[in-house]
Structures are given as structure tokens and as C-alpha cells.
Image 1 (cartoon, rainbow, N blue to C red):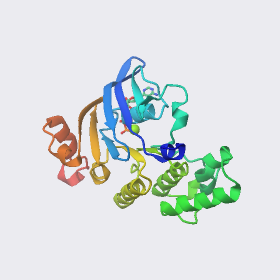
Image 2 (tube, rainbow, N blue to C red; image 1 turned 120 degrees about the vertical axis):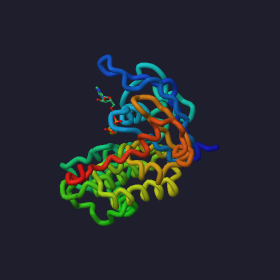
Image 3 (cartoon, rainbow, N blue to C red; image 1 turned 120 degrees about the horizontal axis):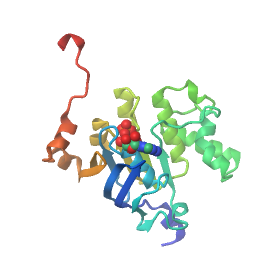
Length: 256
Ligand SMILES: Nc1ncnc2c1ncn2[C@@H]1O[C@H](COP(=O)(O)OP(=O)(O)OP(=O)(O)O)[C@@H](O)[C@H]1O
Ligand SMILES: [Mg+2]
């Protein structure tokens, strides 16, 4: 296999014995996961269960107290490993820069690293914005966009690096149900088009069951189940069923 092939391949991710505490408070209690190249793997769990912390470890933004993360079998804390693979994260907040236009946000990586001439960057930015349904919005300021549009800009920005691994943190939070469905469809389309391994962290059960090839349930810092959506629906653990079937919606005041 030549270098170009190795470089365009999607990657496997393994998490081995990951433990993490903050100020003596344990948050992750020994996480083990095996994520296959090209799959959409969903990590689902309630608020505060440790999903974002886990994702930050996978992309190297947090370092474990104990345990290892491996990409294609290579520990990410070994020299040069993080530079070998192209990874992108769509942050829970979107994390767009308000001082830049939408187009500048999307092209930031290419501009900062002087990877392409400006005309070529403009072409790539236009292409990625079109992919996420935001054609022609280059000149807008992020502050002029709805929450759903900001999420899509964040996805376009992640796509610019042609990632082998994409991590999505709560891609549908703050969105209405219809926009949430659109984002779910985009995650599926992009996975089919780019074959990038996709890890989606969410407490949105509809999104999880809609996009997952396989899913893991995390409760209070422990992975309690891994399986296909069908296997997860049939999981016998009462704590999992409680999480999957609870009605979190507010009851109308008149019915209380
Ligand atoms: N940098 C940090 N310092 C101290 N505590 C932290 C830090 N980051 C996360 N935590 C704690 O770790 C726990 C898990 O947080 P995390 O952000 O992973 O939850 P989550 O599952 O992503 O929740 P949500 O669904 O609300 O996003 C929380 O109790 C949080 O307060
Ligand atoms: Mg989170």
C-alpha cells in the first residue's frame, strides 16, 4: 500500500482501561471500547455521565490518569501519532469564531497552515458549505445564524481537513426536532461519502438510533452496554431500559 492509500483510509479506535478523575472526583471508571474503521459509533448517556470527557481523551485534548487510546493500533501519546491521522471534532458549542465570517471559519485550517492558495481555499469552502446545505453563506457572520446553521458550519469546518475520524459532541443539542433530523441525515450522508470513522456522543435517543451502526451506553462513567441498535433495544439491564424509555418531557401544568 502506498502512502496516499494509508492516508485516505478510515481508522480504528481503541480505548483501553481509561480512568480519569478531576480534583479527586472520578469521572471515567475504566473505559474499554473498540471502534471499527468506517463505522458510525454512538456513545449515548445522560448529562454528566462523562461523554464529552471521553471524547476529549480520544482526540487528545485530555490525558488519561490510567489507560490508553489507540488509533490504528498506535497509542496517541507516542511521538508523531497524532500528526499521522486526520481527525476533526465538532464541538458541543459549535465553537465558531464570531470575529470571522462563515467562509473564514470553514477555511481557517487551510488558511492558517497555508495549505492551498486563496482561490483554491474559496473553492473548498464553497464545496463544504454546499455539502451541509449552506451554499453561498460565506460572507455571513456566525452571529447571524441560527443554532442549527452554526452546527452545520462546524461540520463543514471539520470536513475541510478530509478527516479519517470525525467526532461529534451533541450535534443536535439546541436544535428543534426537524433540524435534528437534518443533522442526523448529514452525519449519515457524510459517513457514506467520506467513509470516515464517526463517533457521535449524544443524549438524543432518536439521533442515536437513527445513525448508529453500533452504540455504547455510558452511565456514571462506565460503559454498561455495547451493541447494534436492535441489541441495545433488547438489553436486559433495567438501568439501560430506564434510560431508553423514560419520558423526559415536561407534563403540562394542568395534568400535575
Ligand atoms: N475540566 C474539568 N474539570 C473538572 N470537572 C470536569 C471537567 N470536565 C468535566 N468535568 C466533570 O466530569 C463530569 C462529566 O462531564 P462531561 O462533560 O463528560 O458530561 P457529559 O456526559 O458530556 O454531559 P452533557 O450531556 O451534559 O454534555 C461532570 O461531572 C463534569 O462536571
Ligand atoms: Mg457533553
